[in-house]
Length: 236
Ligand SMILES: [Zn+2]
Ligand SMILES: [Zn+2]
Image (cartoon, rainbow, N blue to C red; front, top):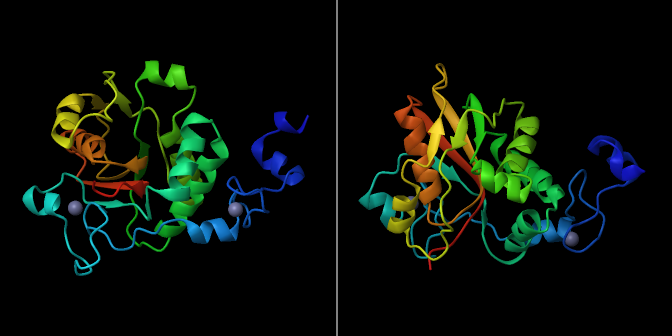
């Protein structure tokens, strides 16, 4: 039974097809070249937190949030906007358990990061609380982090950063309420020697989660925290 084989072997028998339209995938991706070209690019964005900026803002600008308050992270990398086909892919990953989405989006994100000279020492996916993890069966951020780690040849860990307190759903809360909701929710196991770390998540919405994670890491002695996300939600 092909489905019981390890993923690399499965791929020998079942060449990837596009998760969005079923056409043959591009190389090892489960996305075709047409659908890849249709992903909404986030190239005109805040240079610190990747928030999509209005067209009239000059390239390299900061958004209002980053001007008012210095974020605890060095920067957010988020190459796509959370809308259209990208939002559909995240929905397939999170709610239809299509783990191939995590692999393909992880590879795509890693391609964007390959050219950078300075690399983090460790990749950490944003953790779920153990109860959430049991309910869902997998952590979508860990699926992305695993693919990125393989592509870039960097170590990753799901043990060092933990969510120690479950938090209620956030979608009806504003940014301030989300930050309050998340305060003290994460714990980083003190590990000496990690000065530069990348935190991986699927989508950055208000930035509250990655802000709290970055604060937690910095309190534990990490000097530089980057955030690597697939997509950023435009301000509403
Ligand atoms: Zn396609
Ligand atoms: Zn910003």
